[in-house]
Amino acid sequence: MTKWSANVKAAFDRAFPERQIYHRSGGTVRYISVSPWQQAIIAAGAAALAGWTLFVTGSYVLGGPTSTIAGNPDDRELAKYERWVQELRAKDALSRSLLEERTDAFQKETAEWEDRQKALEELFDKLKGDENLEVSALKGDGTSLLVKASIEEADNRQSRNYQPITASFDMSGTRVS
Image (cartoon, rainbow, N blue to C red; front, side, top):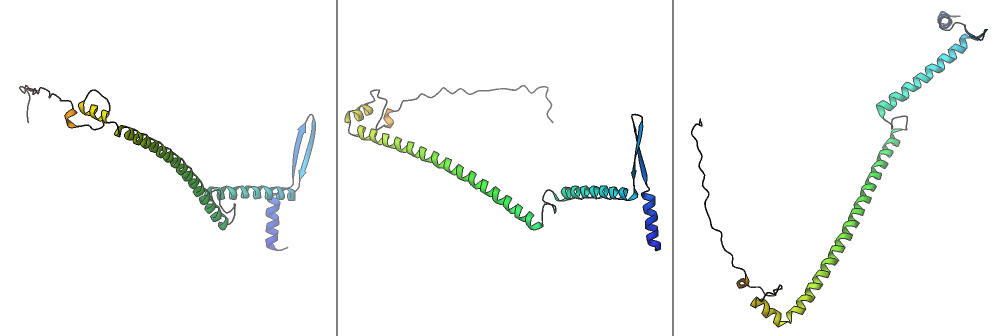
């Protein structure tokens, strides 16, 4: 054996001596013997588990859920673009639904205004041929519908009596600087 391998064997023997685990229960004593190689395998497994836990935790904290564990950088870039496309599609669907709602409301309002226009045109056509209505409106005999209103039919208004308001202030005892 070389000096290096002798040093490694001595360190291994110091770190993992043969151990016996005693268990006493109900008046009987049992023991389990754990060899140095079994201890080394258990220690290596625990170290690997702890190392993997630290690596995964560090990758998640530093890189987020799309870190190197989740895949290569191309996959992350693709996932980012897919997320953008989904957001744009959702915005597009919302915009389309708002446009449809507003178009329907506009069409309803337009139909209502057209109906009103037709009703007014019909009323105007009926009233246009009635000369008695036009005369009564001009005479001002109390009808509520005036076809041809004139300035002479307006009510005369009276102006208010204007009385100026005056006020006085007592400034004695106040100090002006």
